[in-house]
Length: 309
Image (tube, rainbow, N blue to C red; front, side, top):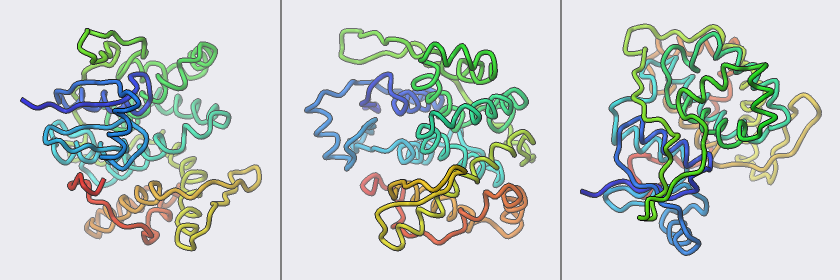
């Protein structure tokens, strides 16, 4: 029977996050390290020069972690790795985009961010409460592949934010050298196979109070970039100027960030008025509402159609 195939560096953040996602959904797959020639073919077929890539059983080749995640969530809805209630689902979207796109860009500024995340996880256990969801997998993959691999950083965070290490270890564990079983497939024994039950299957749509400072920080930097990025793309500018508290800095415009922002906006627009008000009541006081309501300036991509990814 045809299986999914993941092509990517076994110790890269995107690959580890994708492997963890497939394991959480109990989807059978093979993990293959791409050669230079194979990477060229995958890039040609997917339209993306960088991995990881996912080949579906039907033969489509998908790229971009967030697009792959959406495809898998659509085609394999059980177990659900995103909340279904509006407030928690929107917060999960915000957290996932921030962790995947923004956090890795700010290693120096991330110390206070990481200690803040550690304080939140110490209070809530996972990003949205007692049970993990998709952003938790993305966070754990980033921590284990790019942050905690530095011994001094691991020791420092073990002292000031031990909940970060506990969170990461509970979902993925240290990413150590993979084994080759002779077939060319790389095995990641340290990535834990988990099934993620979501507490929002109940009627409660609450988020932990300790998440509010995290959302406030997201609004102050990443969402500030999203607002400026939307304007830059609209005007055809070649840079995005954002003041993150220490003077304006130039960033390149990113269409993928705009597409992700617009996707959340479309989900909000599709909510019934009462649910939309509930989300707004949570996000507006911390400044995380405005950026999501701006009109999109890039063409919508349908995650149900792999040819558009």
